[in-house]
Image (cartoon, rainbow, N blue to C red; front, side):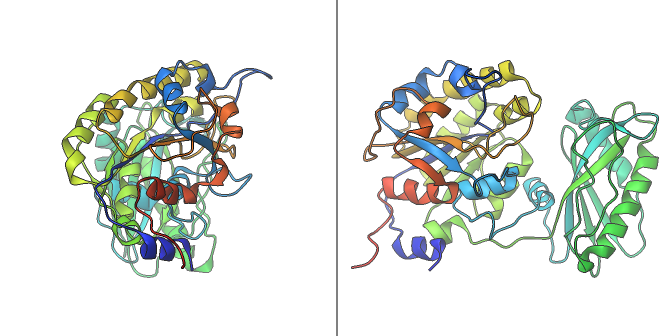
Length: 401
């Protein structure tokens, strides 16, 4: 019996509320040996106060030693085995902006980048070009024409866009064209299986025409393609947990992932304060709330330790607003670690705090990587976080006689 078959069998209905607050890329590392991480450096009085009555540990997003992308990281938090359920970034981005994927479509996440005179990448995110500058470029790229293929280009946010290829015989297994570093040209699209050879050729033609169309742009004069993927099919939160679930997120990708697991996307908040307003307004309509905060990740990717500390403090500041609503279970965690020291997602287990009236508190009085190593939850696979949440909310029956 797999995990979801078990939760289907054991889930019980009641009026309890579960809140999962995800600080994207929350985990970190010290910048110098023996120093403190970003979370440990930040002033987090609310997290420390909750630590005194909660239980903490370190979650493993996928498997030991594996650095996850945001998709697998969140799937684990939602209780879906990220090795069994593979969702490409393109499908997440497309679904997140409300694009209705059809069977056979291949969706791709695009990044505008800046190319130098030699065609090498000088900035992988085109200076984090603001959305008001990047959005019109989707109309420019819509001029790409490939015989026998429908091409849809949609803006996402800042340097991100989505392209969807629709036609016969397309496969979604194509390698990314982002080399993940500067000073080199974008990679060519390469099929990872015979079924995707046609898609790779279409992507190469798209890139060729797109770069010609973008050639005069001051920042976004090039692009990379990531996360080629077909439409996925996942069981919903209601099916596997018996929960009416809501997502309160800013970035389209996270809305997309939430929608793919059957959550309703509520509100159009752009700040944490606005997200708290949406939470309060929708409190009576749902059992489970996923609240996403992006900027603990992006500051880590930028290698900006101090900025990540400030964003962590910002996250800490909204906890009283959540507590005031009286959730039966409050979880604070991340989908992966993004240490400023590494400027990237990493394999390190993620600090996780669970608070409920019936949890078994551990002795810790603060919340950070060091305390999570010896916390009561221990090291655990993230896919079990939802069963812990359900149990603490009184929503899991007994297994066996």
